[in-house]
Length: 329
Ligand code: SF4
Ligand code: SF4
Ligand code: SF4
Image (cartoon, rainbow, N blue to C red):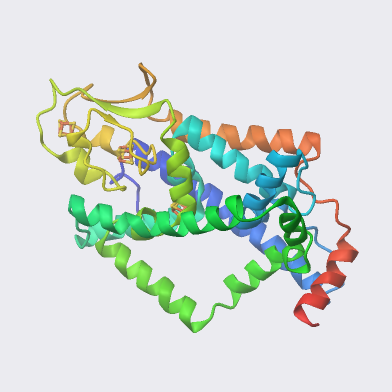
């Protein structure tokens, strides 16, 4: 029977959390598929929409966040989307890019391919200059979104987008995109998967604008890996273990926007106490980041549910009419 003994404890914890949340996402996706089937008249059995699918609408959430900060008005179309978006930003500030390390299902797929690359010994390190150059695209894409939405859109145009037919059923469009990908999408995804066998986590490190945004917030996190220069024997094992390709052995404190708090470097280090995860000056257990991310997510969910920041107030029948108009059924 296959075991996970090849993984260190931090890897096993990470894998367990990632796998559990990915299974949850798949289940939510299945329920949402049933819901969309009802919206399109494919069945008369009504399945309520799982609000958590709104996590896949970051652009709508970014607009809703801007409106919230300017007017105090919470988004009533995709309230869970705004709740989760702000929760992930808070998570980044508090717990580094723990969202990418433990929560995001795309990150899970990316880390599985990265592990496969390690097993096949195809994964290569990129040099410092190449790493910097490859990192530019995700910030360019992020700047485009921030420029267009945070700077370019006023409250009126945001409101007209958020109440537009397209946005009301944007999650259904997203589902169609996932279930019926175009040939171009399939080719791009396949190319990214192959690329990730050679360059660790290529999508996450170099192309994902959401990860770039979280990384910028994570710079303010009190949590970081620290290296004791005096005891370091310069073996480079931490650098080799790092899924984010960070040169841990050259840093005293890893304050990189790429660090996902996975603790792989800590466990690879042969010198006890040389690398530690710290919150400010206090050493914390390696499990703290992953467990705290899940705890924060559950706490935010409970708060949103109790205070009406989770479920949309739009009646299902109205959404059904909008869906029919949008998709012409
Ligand atoms: S970089 Fe993007 S895709 Fe990767 S784990 Fe983070 S949010 Fe998910
Ligand atoms: S620096 Fe350490 S904790 Fe951060 S991503 Fe790399 S291996 Fe994980
Ligand atoms: S693994 Fe530990 S001892 Fe080796 S280079 Fe990294 S910090 Fe130094």
